Length: 449
Image (cartoon, rainbow, N blue to C red; front, side, top):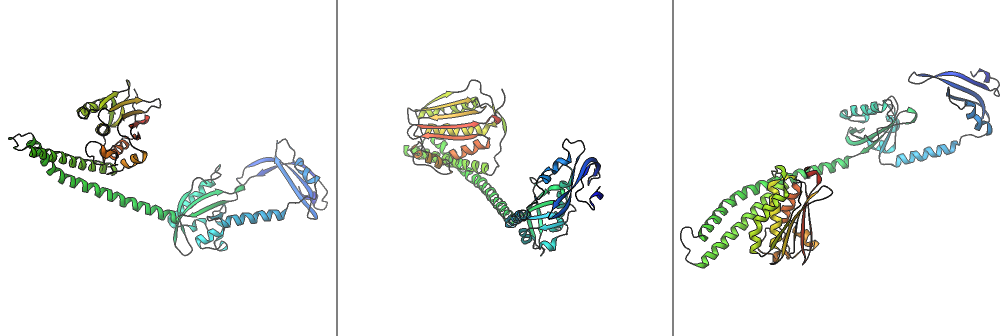
């Protein structure tokens, strides 16, 4: 095919029909055109090929060369671009490793040299897997094999953690991604030292383990101490009730009767505090036993209102109810839902002045959520006071004006119980106007009608 050009560079060879064999030993027909062109003051041969059957003839690709015979590639610009790319690669903190199709290293960037402790010339030609610890060498080889599969261009989104090995033998944790180079000429691996990540991850794991142990110890301590406190408390409360009721004879002095009522009230207050402490510690430790079932909020709230009605009557607070007519059931723990409703309604009555109102309602939102609302016309709170009230053992000055003493755990415990039921707990309030508490069960916790 090229013999015509041995002596005469001006000869043109017309299109020839040939067969081309690929690296995978596949053959397909091509049309070829060989032509002499000027090159650096002399002559060169230009070969143009195309698949047989394409519309454009190979000779059309030579028009530019014929029109501008003296045009040559800008080699200096090409070298400048290569230098720029080398500078960018060497400036990056990640190491870059070029790998041949045979799995051996062709070259490594300066950051990779610093990372592994090898010079590029020293490591060139060695297997890529030799840069890694024994337990990671198979992962590196499998990574390259996966990229070699037909139709796979890159696995850049499939980064892997591996253990690298320095020249001195020290091991370093790495994050590695590999892509295939153009023209199927090899692979490019990018490796990042994640020593700091691993150290931070280990610190977090240790801190979490310490916190979990401390929480477990706290729960165990509270369980033991609550048992020790409850036994004498129950005796104190029981005997004081017997004496106030004069079961075994009259109490001679009215002042003693008042003292007994104080003892009974204080004992119940301490018992409530112990119970709240134990409940909130169990929830925080994830040890609260939850029996999820279908719960009717309308029925549960109706029972709660009936239970709290005597307290509301004593405080001269009006309770109004407004329940949705067709309210689907929610998936929740019935015992904790009752406790949630009792806590919210009890607080609303406690912090509403005589003559005020507490409105208990339910709603089925268009979004599919089921909502329980308790609105009161009480003293209200500022946003800062709400934030304070939601912290354990915190009681703000405004709430201290309510009737009776609280444990400082009512709202935090209620919020924790709501979240344990996969629901949302929100409070909006205005000083002097009242407070609205909402418990929202998302549509994912609502049963179909």
